[in-house]
Amino acid sequence: MTTIEINGILINYQYEVNSKSGDDTVVLVHGFGASLESWNDIYPALSAKNSVLRLDLRGHGLSDKPLDALYSLKDQADILKGLVQRLALKKVHLIGHSYGGGVVLMTYLSNQQSNVHEAIEIQSLVLIDSAGYRQDFPFFITAVERPTLQFLTNLFPATLRARILLHKIMSVKSQITEERIHRYAKYFDLPGASHAIGEAARALIPPNLDELVQQYRSIKVPCQVIWGEEDPAIPLKFGKRFAADIPKARLSTLPNTGHVPHEERPQETQAIIQNFIKHAS
Image (tube, one colour):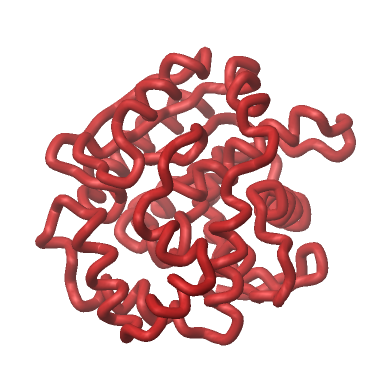
């Protein structure tokens, strides 16, 4: 992993080049409050066949956490696009989980408005239990959206918060290992992390969300939608909406799976992604 300055802040990322994949690069965008390590279970298999980029979003993981309010989906999309441009990636397959799916959608839609010299070349999208529609916030958003409630939440040890989070969002309980709990917890109390997560939660709903939803029908690239059938945070009905609203979308569901298929059922999720990318390249 290394860092690069994008829009004035340091972004932590990992980029593995695979000569077998030509100009195509898979880009992994993690969910709310997570880090690039949330892809650990599928990263080795994906990078064995593809060039792969994964990053910590602004305010997450080991990326900078400025004490400002620039944590909207558009702000994160600008970071993602800037990183793709700085690394001179030519053909990208954007894969986003949950909050990261919202970032991926925002990146695609804003990129459509860019002139030919500023646009990046997006080959396909993969949305995993993705944000993108108006809904009641999941508990892990409401717990940090209000400063008072966030303060009270932060009184509990990070490992306990991570344990509770994973037990609530994951259906495959055998995957809730001490290593996975630590994977999340170790970033929760870093300097600036609480501020960043709170600001991201408060900026989660774009003011023009209804307009953006209408633009889903303008997405021209192939889109693979992957969903855990028992997702308690973003229910399957939203996966079905993506499949209906995006012209070239197809939906794959995983039974007995919660909000994080790539961590709960990594082999199955990786196989769906790999097969999709193979035909979308």
